[in-house]
Length: 267
Image (cartoon, rainbow, N blue to C red; front, top):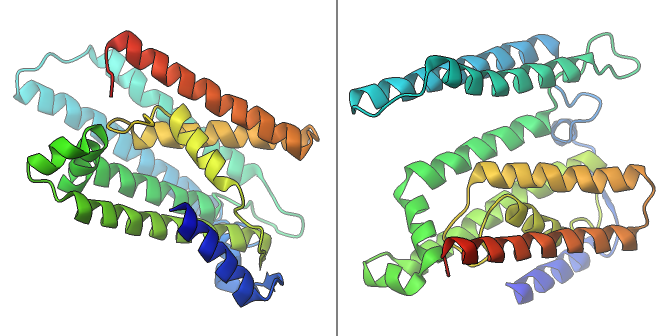
Protein backbone atom coordinates (compact mmCIF):
# COMPACT_ATOMS: atom_id res chain seq x y z
CA UNK A 1 0.00 0.00 0.00
CA UNK A 2 2.76 2.45 0.92
CA UNK A 3 4.73 1.54 -2.21
CA UNK A 4 1.69 2.09 -4.41
CA UNK A 5 0.97 5.40 -2.70
CA UNK A 6 4.48 6.67 -3.35
CA UNK A 7 4.50 5.35 -6.93
CA UNK A 8 1.20 6.98 -7.90
CA UNK A 9 2.24 10.22 -6.22
CA UNK A 10 5.39 10.24 -8.34
CA UNK A 11 3.42 9.32 -11.48
CA UNK A 12 1.04 12.23 -10.90
CA UNK A 13 4.02 14.54 -10.53
CA UNK A 14 5.47 13.32 -13.83
CA UNK A 15 2.15 13.62 -15.69
CA UNK A 16 1.63 17.18 -14.43
CA UNK A 17 5.30 18.00 -15.10
CA UNK A 18 5.48 19.43 -11.59
CA UNK A 19 3.04 22.21 -12.46
CA UNK A 20 -0.26 23.28 -10.94
CA UNK A 21 -3.09 22.38 -13.30
CA UNK A 22 -5.94 24.95 -13.39
CA UNK A 23 -9.56 23.79 -13.42
CA UNK A 24 -11.97 25.88 -15.52
CA UNK A 25 -14.88 23.49 -16.02
CA UNK A 26 -18.08 25.01 -14.47
CA UNK A 27 -19.38 21.62 -13.34
CA UNK A 28 -16.27 20.81 -11.32
CA UNK A 29 -16.18 24.32 -9.87
CA UNK A 30 -19.66 23.73 -8.43
CA UNK A 31 -18.49 20.53 -6.76
CA UNK A 32 -16.08 22.57 -4.67
CA UNK A 33 -18.83 24.69 -3.10
CA UNK A 34 -17.55 27.98 -4.45
CA UNK A 35 -19.51 30.95 -5.83
CA UNK A 36 -22.19 28.77 -7.40
CA UNK A 37 -21.51 25.74 -5.23
CA UNK A 38 -24.73 25.83 -3.17
CA UNK A 39 -28.21 24.54 -3.96
CA UNK A 40 -30.03 27.71 -2.86
CA UNK A 41 -32.30 28.53 0.06
CA UNK A 42 -35.59 26.92 -0.99
CA UNK A 43 -34.09 23.59 -2.12
CA UNK A 44 -32.13 23.56 1.14
CA UNK A 45 -35.30 23.92 3.22
CA UNK A 46 -37.04 21.24 1.17
CA UNK A 47 -34.11 18.87 1.62
CA UNK A 48 -33.97 19.63 5.34
CA UNK A 49 -37.71 18.93 5.68
CA UNK A 50 -37.34 15.61 3.84
CA UNK A 51 -34.50 14.57 6.15
CA UNK A 52 -36.65 15.43 9.18
CA UNK A 53 -39.50 13.32 7.78
CA UNK A 54 -37.10 10.41 7.31
CA UNK A 55 -35.89 10.75 10.91
CA UNK A 56 -39.44 10.68 12.28
CA UNK A 57 -40.44 7.80 10.01
CA UNK A 58 -37.37 5.84 11.08
CA UNK A 59 -38.23 6.36 14.75
CA UNK A 60 -41.83 5.22 14.26
CA UNK A 61 -40.74 2.22 12.18
CA UNK A 62 -38.27 1.18 14.86
CA UNK A 63 -40.98 1.33 17.53
CA UNK A 64 -43.36 -0.66 15.33
CA UNK A 65 -40.76 -3.36 14.68
CA UNK A 66 -40.03 -3.69 18.38
CA UNK A 67 -43.73 -4.04 19.17
CA UNK A 68 -44.15 -6.65 16.44
CA UNK A 69 -41.40 -8.80 17.95
CA UNK A 70 -42.54 -8.22 21.57
CA UNK A 71 -39.46 -6.15 22.40
CA UNK A 72 -40.10 -3.48 25.06
CA UNK A 73 -40.20 0.06 23.68
CA UNK A 74 -38.84 3.14 25.36
CA UNK A 75 -41.44 5.68 26.46
CA UNK A 76 -42.63 7.62 23.43
CA UNK A 77 -41.36 10.88 24.91
CA UNK A 78 -37.83 9.45 25.14
CA UNK A 79 -37.81 8.29 21.51
CA UNK A 80 -39.32 11.60 20.43
CA UNK A 81 -36.55 13.47 22.26
CA UNK A 82 -33.84 11.40 20.58
CA UNK A 83 -35.50 12.11 17.21
CA UNK A 84 -35.84 15.81 18.01
CA UNK A 85 -32.10 16.29 18.58
CA UNK A 86 -31.00 15.45 14.98
CA UNK A 87 -34.00 17.38 13.63
CA UNK A 88 -32.85 20.51 15.47
CA UNK A 89 -29.31 19.98 14.19
CA UNK A 90 -30.50 19.59 10.58
CA UNK A 91 -32.79 22.63 10.65
CA UNK A 92 -30.16 24.71 12.44
CA UNK A 93 -27.56 23.78 9.84
CA UNK A 94 -29.91 24.67 6.99
CA UNK A 95 -30.72 28.02 8.62
CA UNK A 96 -27.04 28.87 9.03
CA UNK A 97 -26.21 27.89 5.44
CA UNK A 98 -29.15 29.90 4.07
CA UNK A 99 -28.08 32.93 6.09
CA UNK A 100 -24.66 32.93 4.43
CA UNK A 101 -24.76 35.26 1.44
CA UNK A 102 -21.90 35.74 -0.98
CA UNK A 103 -21.31 39.39 -1.95
CA UNK A 104 -22.87 40.08 -5.33
CA UNK A 105 -25.63 37.48 -4.96
CA UNK A 106 -29.20 38.31 -3.96
CA UNK A 107 -30.01 34.91 -2.49
CA UNK A 108 -28.40 32.84 0.22
CA UNK A 109 -25.90 30.17 -0.69
CA UNK A 110 -27.80 27.26 0.82
CA UNK A 111 -26.34 23.84 1.51
CA UNK A 112 -22.96 23.47 -0.25
CA UNK A 113 -22.72 20.70 -2.82
CA UNK A 114 -19.69 19.10 -1.06
CA UNK A 115 -21.90 18.60 2.01
CA UNK A 116 -24.46 16.80 -0.14
CA UNK A 117 -21.75 14.56 -1.58
CA UNK A 118 -20.48 13.84 1.93
CA UNK A 119 -23.99 12.99 3.12
CA UNK A 120 -24.74 10.68 0.20
CA UNK A 121 -21.43 8.85 0.64
CA UNK A 122 -21.99 8.49 4.40
CA UNK A 123 -25.51 7.08 3.94
CA UNK A 124 -24.34 4.69 1.23
CA UNK A 125 -21.44 3.45 3.33
CA UNK A 126 -23.67 3.01 6.39
CA UNK A 127 -26.06 0.92 4.31
CA UNK A 128 -23.19 -1.08 2.84
CA UNK A 129 -21.73 -1.82 6.28
CA UNK A 130 -24.94 -2.60 8.14
CA UNK A 131 -27.28 -4.07 5.53
CA UNK A 132 -25.16 -6.12 3.14
CA UNK A 133 -23.25 -9.37 3.27
CA UNK A 134 -20.14 -7.53 2.15
CA UNK A 135 -20.24 -5.31 5.24
CA UNK A 136 -20.55 -8.29 7.56
CA UNK A 137 -17.65 -9.96 5.78
CA UNK A 138 -15.49 -6.88 6.35
CA UNK A 139 -16.07 -6.88 10.11
CA UNK A 140 -15.55 -10.63 10.31
CA UNK A 141 -12.23 -10.33 8.49
CA UNK A 142 -11.17 -7.43 10.67
CA UNK A 143 -11.89 -9.39 13.84
CA UNK A 144 -10.12 -12.58 12.76
CA UNK A 145 -9.16 -13.10 9.10
CA UNK A 146 -8.09 -16.72 9.64
CA UNK A 147 -11.41 -17.64 11.23
CA UNK A 148 -13.25 -15.76 8.47
CA UNK A 149 -11.45 -17.83 5.83
CA UNK A 150 -12.27 -21.06 7.67
CA UNK A 151 -16.02 -20.32 7.66
CA UNK A 152 -16.01 -19.73 3.91
CA UNK A 153 -15.62 -15.97 3.58
CA UNK A 154 -13.67 -15.14 0.38
CA UNK A 155 -11.00 -13.12 2.16
CA UNK A 156 -8.88 -12.32 -0.90
CA UNK A 157 -11.85 -11.20 -2.99
CA UNK A 158 -13.28 -9.04 -0.21
CA UNK A 159 -9.85 -7.50 0.37
CA UNK A 160 -9.57 -6.61 -3.32
CA UNK A 161 -13.08 -5.10 -3.27
CA UNK A 162 -12.10 -3.06 -0.22
CA UNK A 163 -9.13 -1.59 -2.07
CA UNK A 164 -11.38 -0.81 -5.05
CA UNK A 165 -13.87 0.90 -2.75
CA UNK A 166 -11.03 2.86 -1.18
CA UNK A 167 -9.92 3.99 -4.65
CA UNK A 168 -13.44 5.19 -5.50
CA UNK A 169 -13.80 7.13 -2.24
CA UNK A 170 -10.33 8.64 -2.64
CA UNK A 171 -11.24 9.73 -6.17
CA UNK A 172 -14.40 11.45 -4.93
CA UNK A 173 -12.44 13.22 -2.20
CA UNK A 174 -9.77 14.30 -4.69
CA UNK A 175 -12.35 15.71 -7.11
CA UNK A 176 -13.97 17.78 -4.35
CA UNK A 177 -10.59 18.98 -3.03
CA UNK A 178 -9.38 20.01 -6.49
CA UNK A 179 -12.68 21.76 -7.18
CA UNK A 180 -12.39 23.74 -3.94
CA UNK A 181 -8.93 25.00 -4.92
CA UNK A 182 -9.87 25.49 -8.60
CA UNK A 183 -6.57 23.78 -9.37
CA UNK A 184 -4.76 20.50 -9.02
CA UNK A 185 -1.51 20.83 -7.10
CA UNK A 186 1.16 18.18 -6.72
CA UNK A 187 1.14 18.51 -2.94
CA UNK A 188 -2.63 18.15 -2.57
CA UNK A 189 -3.49 15.42 -0.09
CA UNK A 190 0.00 15.07 1.36
CA UNK A 191 -0.17 13.70 4.92
CA UNK A 192 -3.96 13.45 4.68
CA UNK A 193 -3.57 9.81 5.72
CA UNK A 194 -2.73 10.97 9.25
CA UNK A 195 -5.97 12.94 9.51
CA UNK A 196 -7.99 10.03 8.13
CA UNK A 197 -6.51 7.52 10.58
CA UNK A 198 -6.95 9.91 13.50
CA UNK A 199 -10.58 10.60 12.54
CA UNK A 200 -11.52 6.94 12.33
CA UNK A 201 -9.79 6.04 15.60
CA UNK A 202 -11.41 8.97 17.41
CA UNK A 203 -14.72 7.80 15.94
CA UNK A 204 -14.36 4.43 17.66
CA UNK A 205 -12.88 2.25 14.92
CA UNK A 206 -10.46 -0.32 16.33
CA UNK A 207 -7.00 -0.32 14.77
CA UNK A 208 -6.96 -4.09 15.24
CA UNK A 209 -10.15 -4.33 13.19
CA UNK A 210 -13.50 -5.92 13.84
CA UNK A 211 -15.43 -2.93 15.19
CA UNK A 212 -16.43 0.55 14.13
CA UNK A 213 -19.30 2.55 12.69
CA UNK A 214 -19.75 4.99 9.82
CA UNK A 215 -21.44 7.49 12.16
CA UNK A 216 -18.45 7.34 14.50
CA UNK A 217 -16.06 7.93 11.61
CA UNK A 218 -18.14 10.90 10.43
CA UNK A 219 -18.11 12.43 13.91
CA UNK A 220 -14.37 11.75 14.19
CA UNK A 221 -13.78 13.52 10.88
CA UNK A 222 -15.80 16.52 12.06
CA UNK A 223 -13.79 16.67 15.29
CA UNK A 224 -10.46 16.47 13.48
CA UNK A 225 -11.50 19.11 10.94
CA UNK A 226 -12.67 21.43 13.73
CA UNK A 227 -9.32 21.00 15.49
CA UNK A 228 -7.34 21.61 12.30
CA UNK A 229 -9.45 24.59 11.18
CA UNK A 230 -9.32 26.10 14.67
CA UNK A 231 -5.53 25.91 14.75
CA UNK A 232 -5.40 27.42 11.27
CA UNK A 233 -7.56 30.37 12.37
CA UNK A 234 -5.36 30.82 15.44
CA UNK A 235 -2.32 31.01 13.13
CA UNK A 236 -0.68 27.95 14.68
CA UNK A 237 2.41 26.90 12.75
CA UNK A 238 2.23 23.82 10.54
CA UNK A 239 4.77 21.99 12.68
CA UNK A 240 2.81 22.58 15.87
CA UNK A 241 -0.40 21.50 14.13
CA UNK A 242 1.14 18.18 13.15
CA UNK A 243 2.43 17.68 16.70
CA UNK A 244 -1.02 18.31 18.18
CA UNK A 245 -2.80 16.08 15.66
CA UNK A 246 -0.26 13.33 16.27
CA UNK A 247 -0.77 13.58 20.03
CA UNK A 248 -4.53 13.40 19.54
CA UNK A 249 -4.05 10.21 17.52
CA UNK A 250 -1.77 8.70 20.18
CA UNK A 251 -4.27 9.56 22.90
CA UNK A 252 -7.09 7.96 20.90
CA UNK A 253 -5.07 4.76 20.37
CA UNK A 254 -4.12 4.57 24.06
CA UNK A 255 -7.75 5.02 25.04
CA UNK A 256 -8.83 2.34 22.56
CA UNK A 257 -6.30 -0.16 23.91
CA UNK A 258 -7.16 0.63 27.54
CA UNK A 259 -10.88 0.34 26.85
CA UNK A 260 -10.46 -3.04 25.18
CA UNK A 261 -8.38 -4.35 28.06
CA UNK A 262 -10.99 -3.11 30.50
CA UNK A 263 -13.83 -4.79 28.59
CA UNK A 264 -11.84 -7.98 28.06
CA UNK A 265 -11.69 -7.62 24.25
CA UNK A 266 -8.16 -8.62 23.26
CA UNK A 267 -8.70 -8.39 19.49
